[in-house]
Length: 119
Image (cartoon, rainbow, N blue to C red; front, side, top):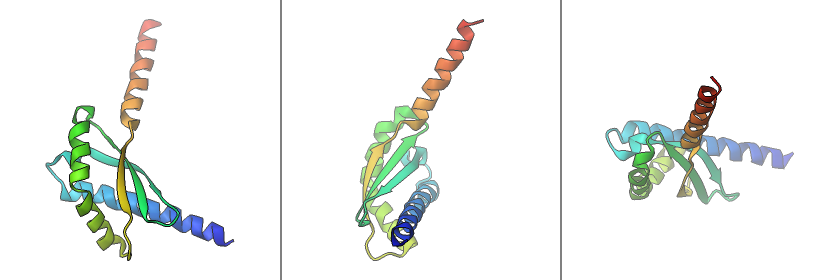
């Protein structure tokens, strides 16, 4: 029973981190490279000391700029998480690119070209 409770709070905390980061990216970084970034998944270590932040961008040509901006502002993002989540120890953030949108676009284009070929 205790494991289930811990698992639920772990998942809930991951969701809070994801939502807080996305909200902060939309409101605090307007007009910067981070406007193009979306956090798609968060994986917290069991002891909550590290967080893998999987991100993607709608504009793949800006991927390098976005990655550099995330690294540049990671301290500010972590600080904001600390304020919003009101926790003693905020996890260290590790940003990992996730090509979800690019992959979806490729699949869409493949399906489109496949249906065009069949006509």
